[in-house]
Image 1 (cartoon, one colour):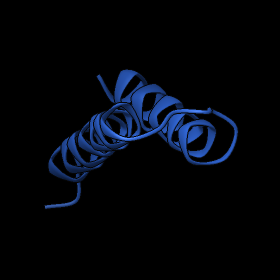
Image 2 (cartoon, rainbow, N blue to C red):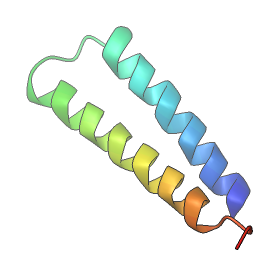
Image 3 (cartoon, one colour):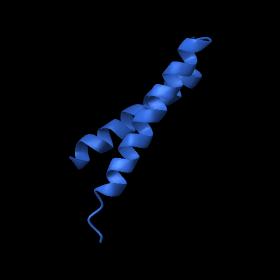
Image 4 (cartoon, rainbow, N blue to C red):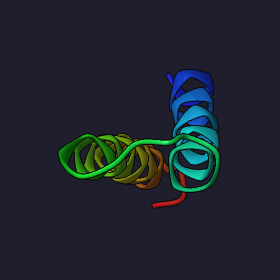
Length: 55
C-alpha cells in the first residue's frame, strides 16, 4: 500500500508543477487541474501519515 501512496504523491507533485508552469490552461480548467492535483496530494500524504507504523 505504501509504494502506491508514494507513487501517487510523486505523480501529483509532478502534475501540479506541470499545471502551474508548463500547461497553457486558463480559467476554470486551470483551477480544476490545480484542485485535482491538490486533492490527490493531500489524500496520499494523509494516507502515508495514517499508515505510519510508529505507534
